[in-house]
Length: 185
Image (cartoon, rainbow, N blue to C red; front, side, top):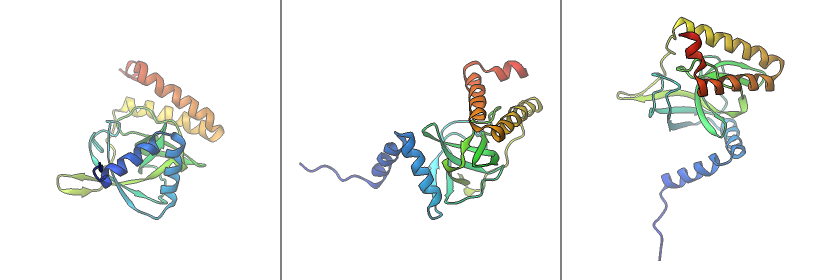
């Protein structure tokens, strides 16, 4: 008995699942993609961390290859075995501090090698368009975000593992206890 032919989309999905299943494989794939020839990739966004700029379910285009890693750019990167799309807050000495537009706290620093590429467009009803500017958060949230970011950036200069530990502890505490809301309001 012959099996049905495997469609290209199914094959790509299976390959993607295989790569994502192992964090080391995922990081190696990200590094190869970033060092390869420039290309445009398309993907769907899952989650609400980028707020209205990239809503849940949005279709995005990612420019792979060597891209400038400058503050304000939105990048796709590998972190914890999954793909994350957030805005760069700081790039220094091979590390990035990123943050979702709808998040109060910056992310745990990631190595620049984990970047897949820069998000250059989002598909809307009228076709592909560039990303919107980040929304302005309330003053209290901006102040807290800046303080935590500044502490993380200083620690990143002094001792990257300590910066990763510090920001990881704060974001875990935020997920479990929502401490920023009780502090701010």
